[in-house]
Length: 553
Image (cartoon, rainbow, N blue to C red; front, side, top):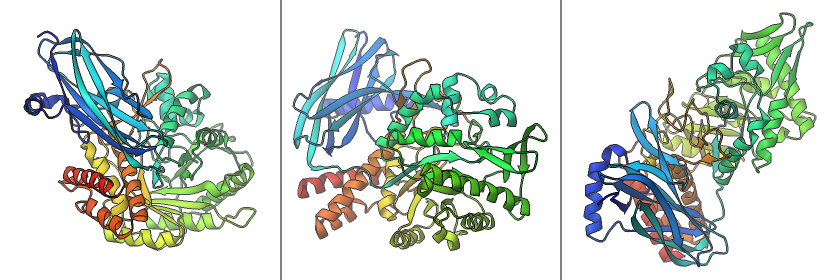
């Protein structure tokens, strides 16, 4: 049959890799013959969203535009949508990975191809409980296949994500991507080019779509830079400072906060008004960059934290920053942030920061990301501490509990190929969110939300890190209406966060029975992120929640 294809319900917690087409097709045909894999069930609460996945496999002679359409669901108070999942190359393993939750525009297909469809249900707060049915229709030429879809709404209301979701932002990379220029051209001139870089208002609409997606999923932290390239160019683009420094003829310094203020305001315009993270006095190259009026050029000066000059320059800056934050009303939100630095440097920054007070006699808050026990004696100086998932579980549990009593935040973080790169399986991201509950922390941090490379929609190409480590979302194609596309990886993180929130509600509202039920749900979650049976643990948790919902709600 010309343009033949099959449709089947795929595993929503895993990828359907193009390289696995023969095995997948055989498995799906066997399931369909048994009357299985032909109905997709999506379970969610009121004021909630959840997803499923359909796989389409084309036959040898297929060719044309594949389309998808959602039908019926007339009595459902919410919406059901279907989008194609676009492939992106995982550069380090040279595999095409279906990760980009793209749109519903028809896609051109050929024979022997897998195309995955992301099906999402979103319920309103006033949605009635019960089951609602509809169909997802897939068409290719004259052929049409339908997958029955049942949306089951549980009689409980989702109240939003309370766990911390801290994803570091990279707006200059977005500006460069949408400009269409290469990194070399956009930041042309080396240190001079980086120093000249400014956030361009003509790309604000694109940035706003990224910020709205971040906010909608619980993100509430703002990433800022206070000196040039604080991570020493570990990202595809160097990272300009949002504060520009000038050294005058008389040796004094002044600072302009134009991008710093603009970026904070842009975040606030979509409701992101939480901690402002300032990177970093303890930057990875141990230097400062400024325009030197006497020399007429940009200077990059390496400084040791043990030197008097380091003390003088950074105290001068901190004094100006504190004054500016007082004037602009953001003092209580600003954190001097440190990422994975050695104890002696961290201690020096703590002492320096606490020596500078504002008009009310307060110092700026501080935040710290760490991968070892080295800085434990300094923890009480930090309003926010994030521990590597590779650290000892029981230690982190104890820290989190003790710090919570003091009103301090403790999260854990992953990076590289630990849970959300393209070389990971999607369920690993979901699994790692269960650690928030297992470790009793306040939430989760990941270092790169949107540090786009040259062509993020095509390949994850980067010289240093695991495929996809640099971004959890995708930009729109240049020249199209502003839009940010989610990823399967990001959706797994946010689904895990929503589950954690439901478990908290069940524990709180259903006493000992709820607590025991949640403990059973999490019983297969190990203390280590790389447990081989993480898919088993995810499915156990998801099915356990469904059973507990049926019993209690």
